[in-house]
Length: 338
Image (cartoon, helix red, strand yellow):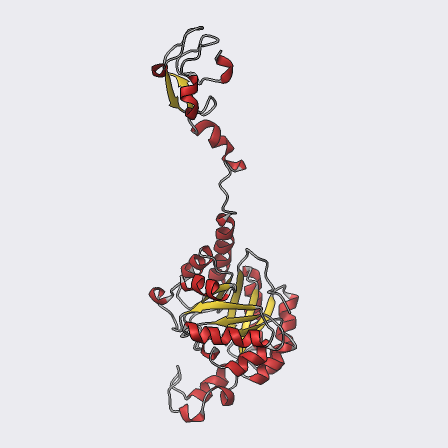
């Protein structure tokens, strides 16, 4: 069984190119270049064809450009003959290639060129497709837009029935763009607890802030639609992020991961030691204390810097004799006491 291709504790950032190549191999490679330069971990595509995706009876339904569904799909579908070249090009750029298959043939074609599979939200109920992909023994990333817990359980079970336990689930809102109020980021933890799998976010909101919030909440995967230019014609460009935004998303995610730390409270970090000395409080003389004087509480006060005895030991200092003259406002150390 293959393991997930990302290290634990580091979010796997996916630039979802999808159909935003506009059926231009040159633009597809330009998008891969930009994704790699931005620091994304993977460039993802979608593999579908009109005859196996929609019924021809649905062709009266208008597409985004006023055309029918079949023409729309064929105008944006990734040519399957590109797959070996796209995979090889990603490898040459140091970025992982994978795609979402939308039919059984696509699973087989991708199996030869990709190390994992993505199941799109709308396909989560296509259990034969999921079983076929899972049978290849490669990690499965399943988006859960529109799904209830029972449907998610069906999909996870379909993978496990094929001996594939390398499953990750993505929270997703299937709107394009999606309003932040329906993103339900807390459901990531619900799925993680229910199914014992890594979770993440397939994010269709505008901007990058929801994705960064998801990482702070424990997302292991972030998938974000990606384009060179949001003004391009096509169904997925308008809500996608552009190269500079992707680079900023990667930067913010990596900084958030660094900020999360290990959860331990074990004292100051190396970078805090200067402040630890000058800003912490310690016991000081409230006035001059002569040598041999029995120290009383009114002779002491806690103030900065923290070079003396800690304030928690105030009552231990009270009742001791000064071993030397202690000028007022001086911090008191152990050597000053008998």
